[in-house]
Length: 372
Image 1 (cartoon, rainbow, N blue to C red):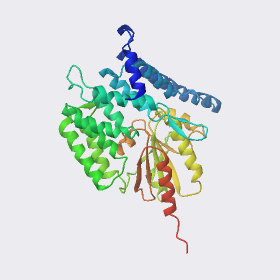
Image 2 (image 1 turned 30 degrees about the vertical axis):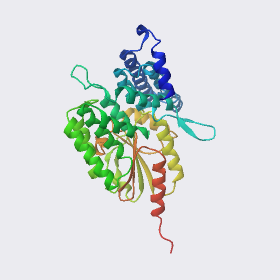
Image 3 (image 1 turned 120 degrees about the vertical axis):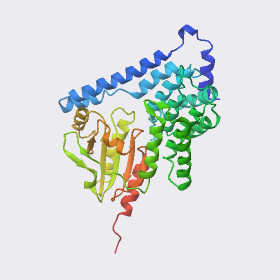
Image 4 (image 1 turned 180 degrees about the vertical axis):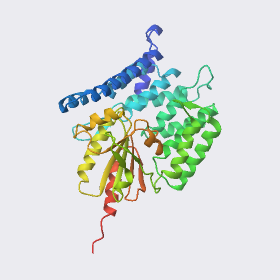
């Protein structure tokens, strides 16, 4: 058993019940972090000089601090069903956070805490009682958090939930989450067939279950659309919109170029990493038929102010505060990247990272004219 998880279980027995954490404590952490992000966004929009904007950007709330605060609440309580929801929130902001060593190697900032959550789910919640109207299960929320995780253990845990849980609605949600997770592992026929089977199970068993205000039926419908129209080899939809200054933008105007689409916003914990990655690619592929376009759903005013700092955002962005463009691509996980060739054919869809860079480099190499 995970050492952190085992120690937490032992310590829990020594804490008087009056001093134990509660769901209200977890809610306070979430609300406090969201409030700090909202205040930061307003300060970004209010900054009027380059110096002021640089100062405001440097004060962006640190997701690692919020994650530590949440862990202080739930770390000793993971056997309790109420912790599944805040644990899902913890995974959503902590999974992508990494520490970089002096030698350039990196590791997950909260590796042990994430491992403890997985162990607790398997030990205490894998066969939890069926949900009732008075006490709905929090496992569906956790399943979607696992679907968004790049942790290789997430798929194995989801498969255990789908196989072992006694409630068929929970099994159906787990099937949906597995289908969502598999789309980042490839698109060979066997995987496609498995995803379709899983989505069918999700619709049959859990269509009416709602997760964060969206039904499983709608989520499954979006996944089916992605399989039909937004997988590798399909032609990506054109994007027609405006930038933060209301000037028209159209993706098809960049025909012939290798394109990276970045669906992002300043709230995602990986925002700084996404911007650094985009800047590095622009430098690496300068002078080549290559372009990056962001699709950003911050308020238009916030995006406009961020773009006034030229070394922060080095690529044009569609302003999409109401998610009209994001819905065309059925974006459910943020941030997300697409790599398209000169004919807008999809070659990669998944989290921003090294695979984006590798795919772009390969496409640019293929597009070189043959030597005579």
